[in-house]
Length: 478
Image 1 (cartoon, rainbow, N blue to C red):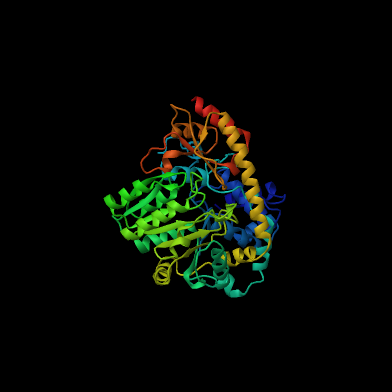
Image 2 (image 1 turned 90 degrees about the horizontal axis):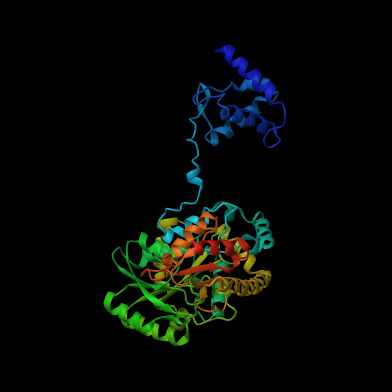
């Protein structure tokens, strides 16, 4: 045993005299062990050389070997056995190529597009996703804000935030909402981790399993996924170019007696439609008569060229709850959203937030505040609107050239809701495109009634690469 260990040390010493994987002594030691494990020279369960002996062979200090072993143990590659030494951990099972390929046989449901988009590799294009390319985000401003955070108080970097959230950011949000006619004092605003968390908290607060919730048909597919998790009955109301079909909305209220309605008022996802004032007034009158609560998801507000009607503005935050986030315009990595609601509901939501996530996220809130209070944010938004307008025109032209017909010409935003030619199924087209490493968003993932079989939603900001249209054309041919 001793002789074999000495020979191992000698081989490692001869073979690993160069720089390590990161150019440091610690990296050289780690690289030597990795290569032996990868080459099966060190088998699972084998004992590693002693720290002192390995340090001598590698011509490094014992502290260097200790740090290398600690890092490898943290990665799970080796294990420490107190009083005995370090041993090679069991090998992970070989990676199956089937696991890293596109999952063509997965059911095309509300999770399908999210899973494919979030797990996409660098060589996969995602015109079906719901966010802007990283290069379109204000990278310089984000980095500057991060540098400012390094000088923040210790409490910002280390403590829980208050449940309501950073007061200066809530004050700024109050002023921004006032510009759209929404009366919300800072105490009526609670920060959340995201728009999705905002809806999740509101569903926990307002509904119980078995309740009925109305959504638009089509609607944002994650509404459907989230409501499924809350075990409620979901009823869809057809969405038109000016909002939900009011006659069918009234019928749904009478027949199903829903507790809640979730919608986008401006730049509707996925259709790009805008709620008209007449539809908004009739909808609110019906909601008042039936005791319906409305969640108005306004995460695309800053993409609008001119503000459209808001249910929360007409209603004064009585039975309408207004939510938003900055994932679409600033960063999906710095998670920060908000809820604006009447004061008694905010009190209940604070308790619920403490129960589910305890405090706020002061780091993300400070980062967003630093950028919003800087005049460069407005310039960034103006640039985004121009880029999206140009991308919409170009994408629309190319899609129509392939025979796809847009549902409408949106006033702004990133989405085109397009109908395929007769005889084509969007889910089949999406599966075939995925084999070409193109993630599309087929219509029925947005539809409760499953009546959007021939529709695809395109993110114009993610559709500039010619490979998108070549793949769509091939997928349409079958």
